Length: 354
Picture: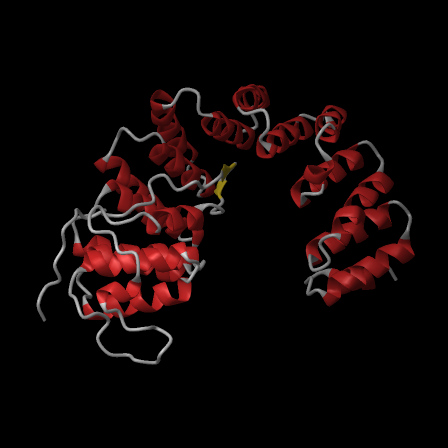
């Protein structure tokens, strides 16, 4: 089959600026799809297509599974896909791209574009597969490896994520995000020495990056160096005072340092909607427990559990605190709810109360 024509440069991957919020010890992928949408809605560098029919694309809804286009221009195919995405017609865009990849399996640009669209659809395994295919077609780039690393992390393939981020950093040693994200993976893998090395690199490239201080705090906390952990997280909060993650990290450090009252004062200054975050409620309950106030711990968790009715672990934790507060009947009721939600230990715990 004849090679498709092209009139603009390969992107070589496009998620270097993926807005993934890096919370301590982990990466959250909340903005990956958002960045993929931004990428796919940018017009081609020349000859932008305004209507998919302008390039003779088969209507994805008419059941015709034949040739995807009268033209063989990848630029025009991608232009049509961009129009579909801008019009929130992701199903049509997906059909066009999947057919295009089937027809031009060796085209890197189409592979990355399909990977981006799978990201939008939260099909991260499929997205990773397309990025790997694109990287194997070559040439690979720092951006493509960064994206593959992010997707591998989202799939909990930490060794692969580490490999991709390392390759990305080797290709572009000037981007501070890459060693920072690599360090986050290494913290998850408990490779703290390597994480420190990469955080030092990231810190030189971006000395005012709050995430770097926060990750240093997490490492110090794991090493039980509490003064360092507190100092580093407070530096992070000075840079980014509105981050809930940094407040929770400081509260965790204070709790470990047996300063539950300080942790409670810190957290209860938060807006109520942030206190309803499950992790925040759990830390607060633990601090109340350290002060011998199991009733307050249970009350805090009950409020949050009612807003998360499918969380079996949370229901079981409510039961534990209620039992410590002497409210056995209510504790059994919550443990029974946890059992219904599939909590593995709820039934045996109920039986142990007899």
